Image 1: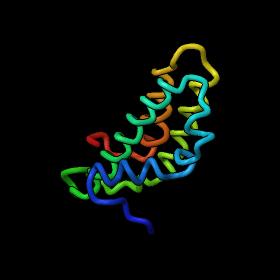
Image 2: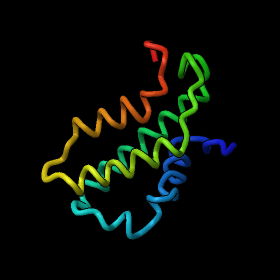
Image 3: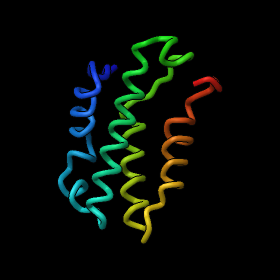
Image 4: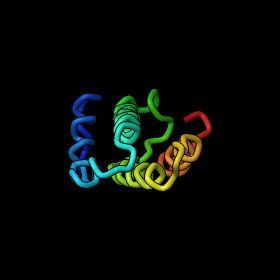
Length: 112
């Protein structure tokens, strides 16, 4: 397996080098680049925090969930799709899809 890097900063740097984020056509090709890049930064920060919480064992998560780069990749693609296909930013839909489905779909303990 590929272990996440140690620390928020290292994890953020690694996230920004993952496909499709590192692809210049994907990164710069959004119809609303300012909004996309701001939300992308927030998504990478969220992913880094989720990854970092794992190292604290039961203090971080009651159950050791298998969050990985696949969760970030699908969330980034959905972010781009939602921004490109809507006139207004669908923040509520993005929060639900990312938080409840992509990441939250793994969480089985109600205290996590």
